[in-house]
Image (tube, rainbow, N blue to C red):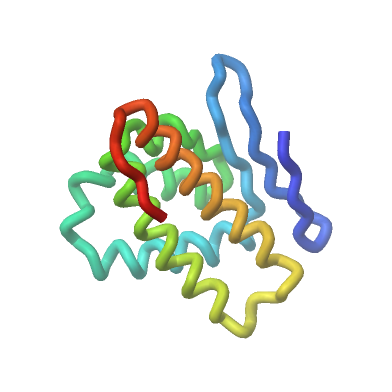
Length: 131
């Protein structure tokens, strides 16, 4: 299990029972991530149907539940679309001056987990993944 410290709070990610990969992120951190992602989702309504389950998982995780990466991103098409949004959100987060430098590793790790899931599914589904 991975632990990333953020002002005394932790983001944990790991493989749990039944080989499910889940994330638990402190609400203060997840609120920023959620806000950035939702703004990008609004700019790209073409992803709405494709990412419906991922968005619902994301909304539930923003309320403090665990985000199951395998369920939220079940196939390459969904993972790639979510990755593209994650990449834009990460770039935005990196440029927000009010986010403390000490918390940036948590945001980066969240992006990396999504990137890794897209890469993993590209291999499984024999697709080409460029990041």
